[in-house]
Length: 390
Ligand SMILES: Cc1ncc(COP(=O)(O)O)c(C=O)c1O
Image (cartoon, rainbow, N blue to C red; front, side, top):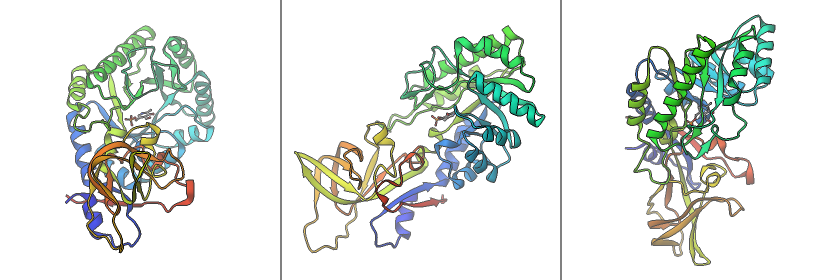
């Protein structure tokens, strides 16, 4: 039985169904198989921003080598469940956060600008410590054509590749930082595994060239995350084996590779289950309105896409009048908010969909609940369930 079915079997609430269901067993197995596919020398981190829920962190803790964190809040959440290494990144670090990083199990701080380098050096000096840093590089090229890019294009992230030589000189002249390596997180939701391998190769080449030119003992090459979920066509997923094989071939004793996976780690363990409240026709198109919406699962609105879903038929119908529904037709699935932007599925085919049926949105375990605008319209929050059954 899958986690959603387990939840539905134990549910006895009169209100329409609306829940996030996390399958911790699936998450454990998935993370273990990703870890096993990588060479032992490649450190396998979880990027907490994808989903910081405590049961997910606890499930991943024995498997991963560490956590990528992006705020003092994430440092706290990880510290509550693990003593493993953390890497602290993010373009807007506050002094208090840098101090929190220096006082916790943060092994490396990403440095994203000259000003941030000065601040980290200054705060480390105040504390009488030396901060190991990774220089976050905004590459000039060699970044695959993925959904969102943080690098290879003008963004707020990292140090422009052209400025890396003076940046290294500045870091070498800063007494309270030590350059541990380079950080290259560059893209989000990349679906092209071969392009990802070429990107890893470029990261390694660039790092080797800077190491040699400045005689650095900076072994770490952090390739970030960015492995994608094919929301548009889940039957053709990212080819992880090609990436893992590529990493194994490129890995060498001269470097310490780190990969920080977010979306690809947790997306598949989460489902967002909602009940259809109404089915109607408007200007020649079918609409199903669900209990819930983009205030719980914002991703399809943010990316203007149809989120993958399936229908769970519910035969029970207690009203003494006709049940609205459609058969073998296209439907737009909208939420309960008072905005036409509250759309999760745009004109997709369904065999049948009726008021009272359930819609299960898959791949809702990453960048889903936590990136959504929960307060808008003051509807009740979804139930949140963690199921851990083989
Ligand atoms: C520095 C850093 N590392 C890793 C990740 C994880 O990326 P993804 O969830 O695409 O794997 C992110 C996400 O934004 C990030 O900012």
